[in-house]
Length: 200
Ligand code: G3D
Ligand code: MG
Image (cartoon, rainbow, N blue to C red; front, side, top):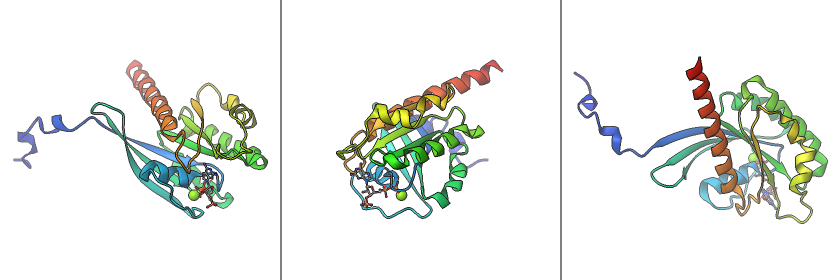
């Protein structure tokens, strides 16, 4: 009896090592979230319109050897009225990408408030956050140190791993490096969680 698969115990042995991760892309409206997502997905610039609900894309990233990772990105609208929705997208997520417009000094305080709100949510404690200091191609972009201070990243606490990455989403500069850093932080956390489970 059965569907035949039970007669081929080694059927899966040829399938490359495969992992999938859920990532929520958040940040104020116009920071460059959708541009970053489509640059990662299609490796090309896609003219964006303000996101009304969310965009979702699965992006396969090769890590060398037979290892390949699928990221399932959820790009959620950043307008004020949509922000209460963020909570549903960050529940049970493996990682968060928080995009900041490096030129928008005026709204840095607002970005900081939203970022810290997310990090403090109980479900998100320990979830790694990749911060993209986007639009670094623009002349008046704030530097990394300044952004780190304005967003009070040091106050995120010891439980939340984070990395601040300079990017230019329209041409893709820094995106791959950022995603690799996020991947490493996620792997580290998964390992720690597995070890905690074993100890119990
Ligand atoms: P959002 O999804 O966070 O709301 P979008 O933001 O991806 O829609 O981008 C908002 C605007 O910023 C877009 O311009 C987009 O082209 C621009 N943008 C995104 N990333 C960068 C970047 O790295 N550098 C520069 N110079 N511009 C960027 P428009 O003109 O369509 O509003
Ligand atoms: Mg958008």
